[in-house]
Image (cartoon, rainbow, N blue to C red; front, side, top):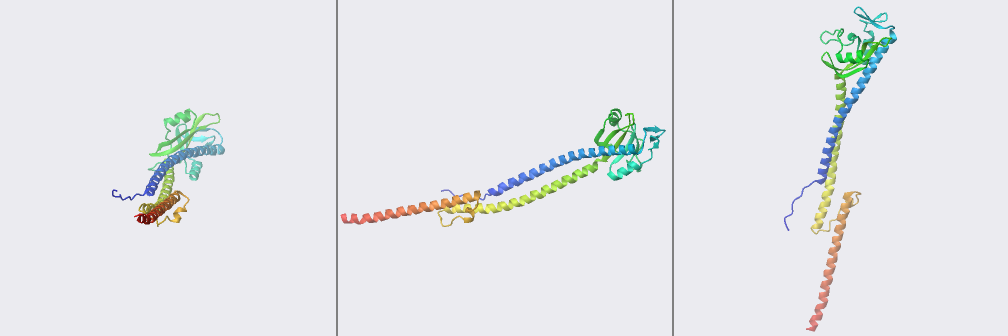
Length: 292
């Protein structure tokens, strides 16, 4: 027989390692998917929030002031009430919601909560973009965007038509929120998801290592029993705790125990046969001697 090779394999450990790697990969994929889903949800809910903010702004002015929107010189009026320079409504709503508001007459920004970075003055007298003008003023439809540049900063924006009593579109209501606010919220949710995934992965990895060690010890014990049987030592049996297990290890342990019992029976039978053979020879020997 050739020299026996030394085997130091750890099947359970390899299985646990593969499972942990798969778990980590799954957690990474789930984090990416969660990030995309969070972004989509925030995009949708933010635009819905801005639409509601626009409608609230419109209802505030329509409910408080009667008459149509019109210009008198350079000042904006609603009915007989001068709106230009009166920021009470939009400033109040801004403080309550954090949303920036603007009222356009035609394509020109007349009152707003938006301010210039350098001076802090309100951004008034500027015009909307051509895309907004075409869709809202000319088309009478809402306009939304998640990447509108205002003072070098990206904004989520929502424009709705501002109409007079005859149904004509004379201006626009604007509501906007900096993209950085939404991005920060999304990033926070993704970080939470990543941290939870890491905690779960680490916890399951530790559990996997402990389980691997536990089962490796039992597998080695069974392997040692098989080796002992192969070497002809049948006195050392399989631990009853292993045989009593209600799983694959219990089945293997029980089979090894049965193998040991069977081999003992075979060896016992062989000894009996040899003993009877010797006894038979012993009985025949005197007969032969008498015949001589």
